[in-house]
Length: 126
Ligand SMILES: [Zn+2]
Image 1 (cartoon, helix red, strand yellow):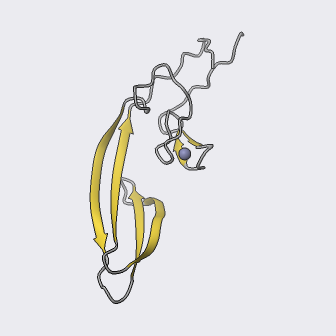
Image 2 (tube, helix red, strand yellow):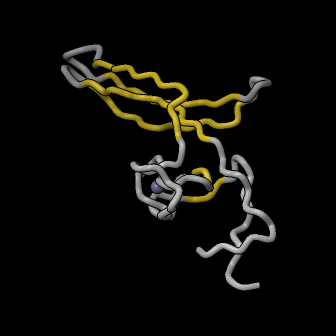
Image 3 (tube, rainbow, N blue to C red):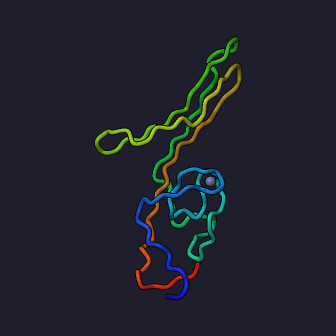
């Protein structure tokens, strides 16, 4: 066998971003967390991720509640499966707001269709 066959990946396979250490999809061309390019892919679309679309997004703002004292906040994301079991729980940010301070948060869910697995007999160059 000449060259190195790329291991076949399955939908949902993950890896660690070498830049920010976030757990990301193995299929990602650009890390959604730190936006570093992870590999240069001839099939990638302009702007980075291959065939990624935003399935769902919500944005909101949090204003300080008082001028004379601080209000602490915690931004927490939980993910549950079809049986309502918690599969992920992450504190994204914490802090305190006072007076005119404000935080705007955006939660988005991006989806993509994984590429078909490489043929087992195919040879690919990295
Ligand atoms: Zn990253």
